[in-house]
Length: 151
Picture 1 (cartoon, rainbow, N blue to C red):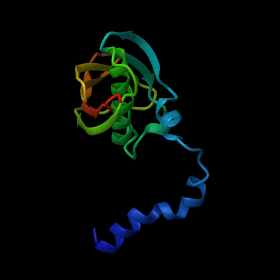
Picture 2: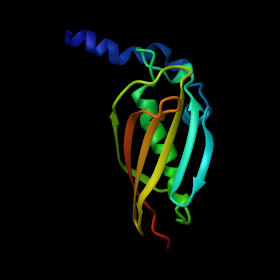
Picture 3: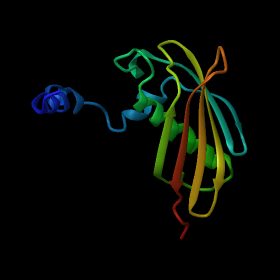
């Protein structure tokens, strides 16, 4: 790909900037979370399910990697108060995702977040994505968060 075409690809958002600027504040939350259903909450563990909506697909018609990473953030963060930690869920220090397979539109998936450690200033969460029909893991995430120190 020549350099100018790379630049055009990255700047094509400028064409829709006026529309995007009209989006409500914090629009990412309903975009990502609008299809989530909580199936189980227990100490240090949260399980959610969802039917993958078309709005979260990439150009290959599978769940977008960015949407998967956002779900690691959202569902993973929920495991922190579920573990008994009072207060805010903190600020992301690191998120990593291993993409093992694809999941497609209207496919039922399950997202399980487990608090591996919730300390005084850091929390480490593991998030696993499974296809509900087969139980096959299609993505795994790890989320580290800095927890605000109570004053």
